[in-house]
Image (cartoon, rainbow, N blue to C red; front, side, top):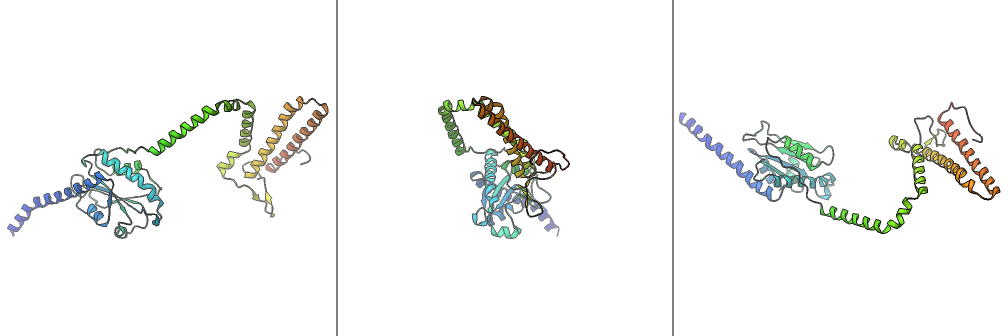
Amino acid sequence: MKLRLILKIGLLPWLCTAARSKTTDKFDRYYTRFSSSPPIKLDDASYEQLTAVPRDYTTAVLLTALQTRFGCQLCRDFQPEWDVLGQSWAKGIKGGSSRLLLGTLDFADGKGTFQKLMLQTAPVLLLFPPTVGPDAKADAQAIRYDFTMGKQSAEQIHDWITRHLPPGPKPKIHRPLNWVRIITVTTALLGVVSFLSIAAPYIIPITHNRNLWAALSLITILLFTSGHMFNHIRKVPYVSGDGKGGISYFAGGFSNQFGLETQIVAAMYGTLSFATIALALKVPRMVDPKRQQLAVFLWGAVVFGMYSFLLSVFRVKNGGYPFFLPPF
């Protein structure tokens, strides 16, 4: 009995050394794959082997479904970010000093794992902490990251992973240059510069036209004073029913309005503005007195009628307003 106990005690250091050597060999083998083609592409067998205990390393595995027939748009959107993270980690940490491996298990290659974990959605990110060694965790269960907020960036996943890693070097995210985008933007800028250099003699006189800027300023003022931003902020309906089978174009009260009401008010203000401009600028320049007199009566009638209609609309908004102008 004592001999058996002595043998067990004597073999214990050798067994621990053998287990440590086994986990180290496993990490070295997978790190070779990770450094050459990050992240590691897994299947059911390699997933089981990579995540099996004991582990003296940390591994993060993305369970995804990339094929179009599975209909996981989020999986396809996030995959480039996951690849950027894996490549940045493999290039930023040489020799595997961080003891972290990143892998990808597609549903087409790992149906058994998905069934074993009873996963109904994808993507899912699992982080397996080390179970042996100086950085071993008491709880060897995988830490799960769910994509409840939609697509995540490589920087967000990087921050989440580093929070669960022991102190040590952490590489930064390095995104590859998007040459297609650079060439496209450069070509577009050169095209715009070329167009402007050729069209400048024709464009500059237009941009210096006071009437053009006056018209744009007037349109902008009418647009915003009529309640355009109110409609966008409140998401108001275009029109509404009046309760009698008809349509109500104006909403009662100062805190309510309809989309069509804004357009009608803007049209009224625009008509009043143009009538006033015509009376102030155009009519005095007329040479024929009879035509000038006719224009005065015509534009005066337009101003009077628009103000009458504007007061009637104001009385709809404020039922207690006592004043009005005929005919409205």
